[in-house]
Image (cartoon, rainbow, N blue to C red):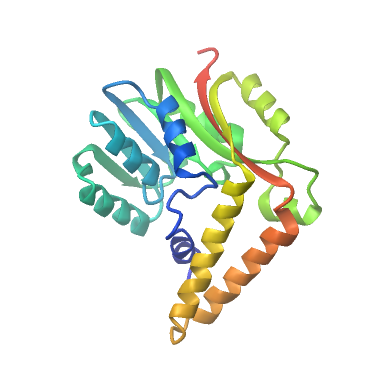
Length: 245
């Protein structure tokens, strides 16, 4: 089973692929989405859950999603049809950093996908290319709550602390107009959902040749979370506006 398939199984019970509960997602979208008509773009949309919720809540919104996974985009199209918003969603299979559009967007999202661009600031640079005047960016990324071990850094990446992360964003020409720091409950719920979903699938399919690999992955990831980064890693989501053109 490849990485994409394992990720799909892991997120069955947590379609927002980030440590955020439903209320946090709703609040972030409320502060990020335009009033009335407008366009939203998700760079690295996966199965499109952010856009699907935005389209359901805002009946005049139009949205586009970009991702490299054809299976994830297929799920996004199917779920958009089930929710009655398929006529307002367009999805594109390509690398998010290579996506180009003839029009700009009032909201550009990229939550938990900064690795695809090479970090937080490159992600903001990519979002800026698509942003309409006066538009907003909704971005989510990790930070270190406490000094991490070398193992945690090698596992997750070289993040800064929360204050430094905000300093970097502001110095890059952005002003936060809303933010959310994931709570311990949200962080733990996300990890339990991911690795629990994987383990459950493996136990429910004992005869599947992939079952041992999936169970081993669930056990290994749960152990890494508990022993390497649970007490040091955090997640921040920001709604940003340009401080200067």
